[in-house]
Amino acid sequence: MSSNELDGAERTDPQADRLPSSGESPEKVEAPSTVVTSAFASNDPSENSDTPAEPVGTKQHTPEITESAAKSAPLVEPSLLKPDDREKISDQWVNVASKKIENDQKTFHRKVLTRVSAKKVTFKNVSFFQTVFDTCYFSYCVFDSCNFIGCRFVACNLNQSTFPGCKFDYTIFERTQVDDEILSAAPERNNLKLKFARTLRMNYQQIGDAKSVNRAIVVELEATEIFLKESWSSNSDYHRKKYVGLSRVWQFFKWVEFKTLDFVWGNGESVGKLLRSIAWVVFVVGIIDMAYSTGAKPFTGFLQSFVTAPALFLGVKALPDSIPPLLSAGISALRLLGFAFLTAILVKRFGRR
Image: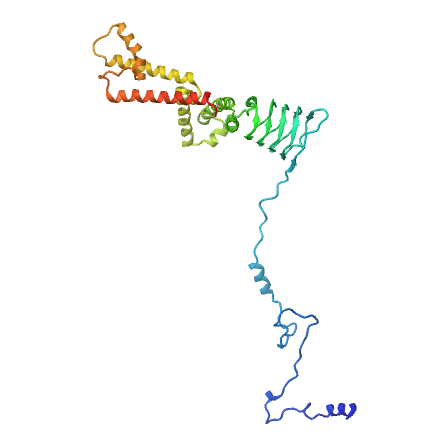
């Protein structure tokens, strides 16, 4: 059969255009299916199955779905932190031909200096604000009227360097070799001064400099006494806002405790004050011995009581039986306490810590 005859047969096929009769069920008629294929193969096996593809446009994007998705999406809050812009300088030598740097407010301002060295260089009116010094070496340098506020010195060597007129508010020292003359550059405010002296005292303890430790303690105690007194007695706005109500009373008792210990033994730093306190105790023991001795005594008898008072206090001579036991126990306790204080002072003053 020729191609023309086949075409004619397809056109005249009675079943192609035949409509279902009234006796036949419409379900038996198979409608031609349209299969949509993609030009690119998909990795999803479900898409490559024989299931007819869903016509494009059957699912419409509704505004309700978009709004609900937007509400369910997590909100990204702005970050409260940002990277620090400090410049890190390491393994550098301060190379200045004139050996003098003046009015420099940028080169060393808020930097991290690691193993930076300088020798016999004069820094005048230079800002080291919030700079971290890590294992730096500044020997025989002069820092004149420089700003060291908020700085941190860690394992540095500042041997024979001087700091006239510098500001050391909130500065911290750790394992740093620095002469104790730096204490003369302590901040003027007493609360900052005692913190400055305290960090230097701890620094000197770390490197084993007992002499500088003792000097730093003296400066710290002087600043502490003034600060405690001003905390409850001063009428400045700073103290009245910081210490209100009972806190002001508590500061008063702290000051009384400090003054009492200072009178007894100089807060552990004065051998002379401790010997003075022991002398007062011996004098009181002489009065007690005189009061509890039987029989009236002439003037020479009173003098004899004061002569024997040191022996009674030190335990060389037994206390009279007429003295009440509780009072005798108090005298013995004061004797032991005096020896303990004296031993502590001698160890602190002359021991290598």
